[in-house]
Length: 547
Figure 1 (cartoon, helix red, strand yellow):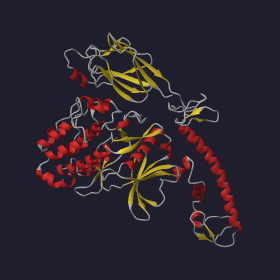
Figure 2 (cartoon, one colour):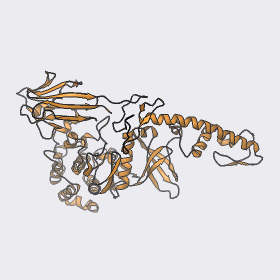
Figure 3 (cartoon, one colour):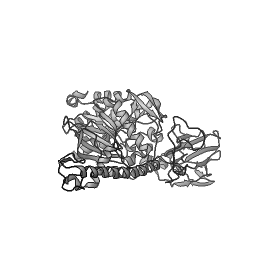
């Protein structure tokens, strides 16, 4: 099983209660109700301390508590009584590493014991095995559990090592079949007395050398051509290294035009349909990335949601699948690129009419998504849900169909999305780094990554609108811990960034960025209605097509 962190309260009103974490989390502990762990003790500060959990590692820092935070009886931080809690929280507080068996004291009557549970490791590479992998040798296997993999010694191994093991076996089989194919081709050439069809390109040619089974052009790169012949003969399946030698995948009936971009999961290509000449964007995921279960699940989740969502202001997914070991998504092409790149081309912030024209459209797309009926993958099952929350909305995920002054706008990348009626069922949680983009996340989402209600998208849309109009983030984060600042700071009123913003519109934006105790505007429809009502008449005339 993967590494887990167990926090057990040993003293206080909640003595005996345990909190278990197996993914990266940022925890606030204190008396305030929105803390990750709430301790109903008056001697505990509202925001007492903060833990960074990255199993099996844990660090703690005091958060400006009055009575201090203690590690194994030794004080590691407290604020002076003359300093306010708000001022103390803005200061940097030293981090301390926690280990198995450490005791964390928050007052005389409140103590937390830290326990760690070691991960089960792959016998080949030493990587952690997922906790939902069927156990070895227990006599039973859950039909809904993922398959277990073993090496030649019968030891448990990870999916990546299993794939490598299969690739090596496939390479040996490929070499055998390659020799058989080469021998057969050479025998056919020796028997031929007339023009023959080249097995590489299909061209007819007259052999000049009885030992040559390829046309002169293909013979220049004999090894690669014979490899491609066998790829087709074997159903388009190659070992991992061979696949990389062939370059990016192209689905049948389409040709590559140019690469549009690349990311951690794969590449995006501009492709053209050979039959119609229509252009699309092709997103691919390479086999080495697919070996990572979380990356594959995220990619497939985006494909699934893209196919389920059908709205003019959401990028359309036309086809998904896997060819030659490469997962792909064929989607609508937006020639204007993303809004953040559009802002760069414009030299910074956008005019009020342009920014408003874009934001009103994406609000329509989000309103549709928040009420759409979709299938949500929950572990190894698929369940129906009403409503999809994006959870990573930002200018980089708004795409424009062209480069006109008032382009059509579409929402992209629902890879972090979750059906909010089934929140908590999905196993897609933080890994490596905290998911999402903090400058476009409200404090509710920072405090609880699994928070998946529509209002987080509404807040992020208001923050994106703010950024498009001012080229500034909603909060002052320069020189500060970005996660801490986004959690504790209030949004700077937008007219302090740009006094030219109309007062009524500024009031709507500022209200939408309220986070305490709740997000100020709950739905995309409500935010759009309030923006439209606050617009000057001259702007309403320009954007009337999207009102």
